[in-house]
Image 1 (cartoon, rainbow, N blue to C red):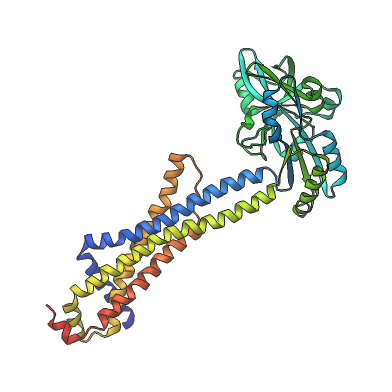
Image 2: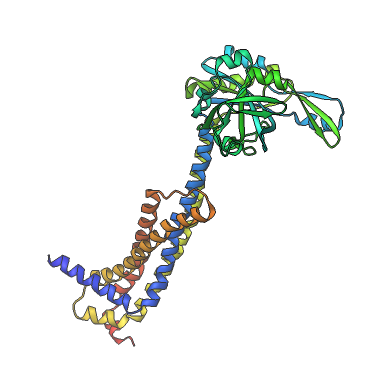
Length: 429
């Protein structure tokens, strides 16, 4: 009890000494406040950016291997300057069949044709992506059927002129009525709307060029693969600057779903070897979301270390500021120290008093920094419309470091005060 009351009196004395110089104490705390705030805020922003990147990759499917047709770079310039030239490249139906029957551990192979065109209903008209695919598309990609149904095997078998719309496109085309059983016009053909869906497991952006950040997913029209081949053919004609270009592409994308994550790692080199054997030109690209996810996780760790290190420098500067002020305080209070020693105070009492003052400064600054640091990410999210994630460990680490800095940078001034000669201290003016 005696020790506890003695310690509390020392704490009260330390706080009283700090309150005698309120402005100086507040300015000393600023370094710790900004340091703790920057650690929490920067890690929250970094964590949010990493989370968005990882979620985008996860939506591609960790069990999937995605193949996309790409125009060979060596033929891009020649095709643009040639008239009547048909450029043939990309993935084929034979590639899909080979992947299905050659690669071990394949659960399903989903071919897709993606064609940009215009969709119309009455006076409403929008540019969209017409995606020809198979009925088991929802099982590979993952969709929520909001109303109606998805494409059926019967639609595929009979080349039915039916389609499924994404929810946002449906709301634009049909702002005042139910789109089911209505007919929309794509190019010169009418399609009956049989379902409305919302995709769950795909990135927010995608295009047939392989750039997953150029086309909104909510502008998609899904039709049977057989209907796509029949209505659009496999040669796409475009009028560019007065000339007509033609590209022959059978499939724009093939998604290979594997049975497990280990099967993905095994199949990846096999898929690349198989395609390389049958494609002389570099007319496709391979995307393995599992690899991208691991790279994103590694980048996240490095990013957090870099951001944490930068922010920790602010804490270090704050600690140096505390030490500087406390050394100046020791000089100012030399006579006071001499009086306390003359009245029987021991060295440990002097050390405790000055350590209490530095710890109060650092802990007080740490608490204020935590409050500001937690608030800043919410402000950033509201203003910049970006995801920020404040983690418990970042708050604990920042606050813990602020307390440790108070002790580490307070020991030297406290020992300097305790080691003053009492007689010399009493003579100090």
